[in-house]
Length: 401
Image (cartoon, rainbow, N blue to C red; front, side, top):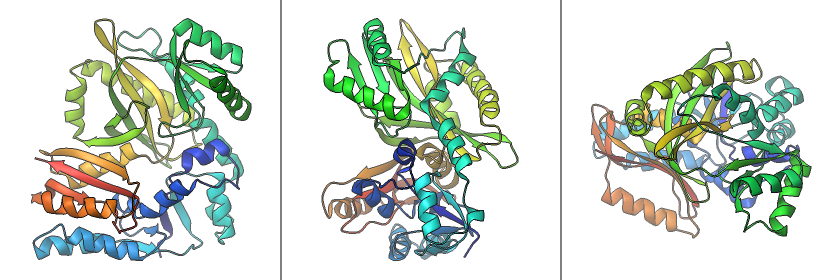
């Protein structure tokens, strides 16, 4: 077994909001963690370990990947790819590389016999939680004050009076808990829709988390992010862009598979590339100073292009995701596996009925067989996680020439 073991724990945001060793994730998230437990195979370094709930998922993944290829050479490549990692369904005492560190994960690893030398201290967990709060955006946005072509306003409210005054001033706003994720923990409200139920929710968030974030609602035309890596040596590196879709409630839906150059071209329809590069440079400087030596790993900064008047502006810091995230994963997937002349979507799907995922998988395999060009995927459907009859969560790629 490798000394480093990757682990997918999608309850990160909710566990950080709760911030107790005894947090229990909802059954839906537990199911998601199991169904998608092989997901790190797509971003882990070969030779490392990956913790899964059942080893049979690994065997099924290898088989279903092989089924996407008509030639034996392709099937052999997928088998070699899967076998290039060390897989375990048991908890072992080793260095873990989770989606993100939380108190409940540390508690679980400790109970499973993982030695203290492999676990982050409580002080470090507090630092990560502090840095992952939406309140940190308030330390980033002032760096863009006075910039032409940039927007972004945010307030940390600590009383119901402050919340209600902000709503009266802005008419329509979005309220966010400092810690939550994937569109959860937020409400779009107006002077007309504000009521005692929402006031109760706001009061509870402020009591438990210390503040409530309030922002104007912008006329958004594009969601994108800049992805970074803070190395153990203190190097702050730009990984690339991610371009993603959300629903009307702000919930993450899918990432578009595009080259960095294609994403820049898409964004250049609204804002200049010079402004985009200036925003990136400023972010690198501010975030490196903010993080210092308190965090190592991937992180992403969610942004928006907003229509304001007759023009467009960049909101440079909607949210900071201080963990591995779907945007980084989609960037890695495109750069490692997709042909540079192709584009597509990276999707995490939630199914509500038994056998629904399996039926979808079989239909996609038949309709969109995988095509290769120069050793990269040029078109077709690729399951990233194994699909069984009881599967409720699945990750997959859909690539177009």
